[in-house]
Length: 301
Image 1 (cartoon, rainbow, N blue to C red):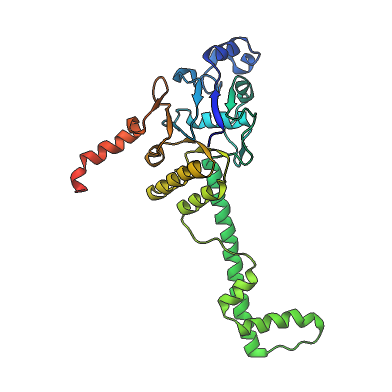
Image 2 (image 1 turned 90 degrees about the vertical axis):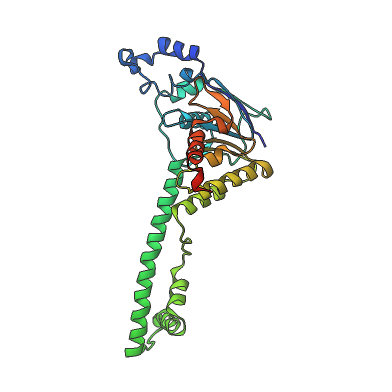
């Protein structure tokens, strides 16, 4: 499924006119004007990147500092797509977005409901929250273990007599402790189902499969972070199936060969000068893996 048809970035002429004519030049201090102070200006014209056409799966490839994450953030902000984590914004972002435009396939002005940009920061926040929650559950569990042991010992040593209705709940708790095992007692009283113990990679993979629903546009910023090679391969298959069968469109920034090799994906190489659409097998990162395996071929035989 396709929702976003194309996106047009600020042209080199538009950027130049803004730099020379805008009142923002006072804030920029033209005597020391540079890429960092002008972010996100002065980034894409040097790459010859102005207009992008999208497929059901479009990949933005490039090394560190290539601008692939910036490009996803620009698209997300222009489209008003929901995000769970903040990003490196600047006081010039709104000015830059004013020069950008896009076209949807159905002629509407907005992407479908549920569309979202998912970044590494969002995944890491989820993993930290999960760890904190499980830590809290662990603490409560230990408290209940101690309570169970103390209750059983007290019942054995002293018994318990109900003297008023106020003592009824305590009597019920003591009777429960004597009837069930320690594990059953804690499980019943914990009131929280602990998340299944998983590695960070497995939890991160689960985050993507939970977040991605049917019939929506998703921007994924380096989703391979925290994922093993096997999980990257599983994620690539999940994304392919979601695009093919469940009405999703993906724009992904990555240098993972497992994601880059997704069949039918359109790849923009931001490391090329000028930026160009390439086959995955032509990309420098993929070629480096290929050459390594060819050189050590005998060790696989």
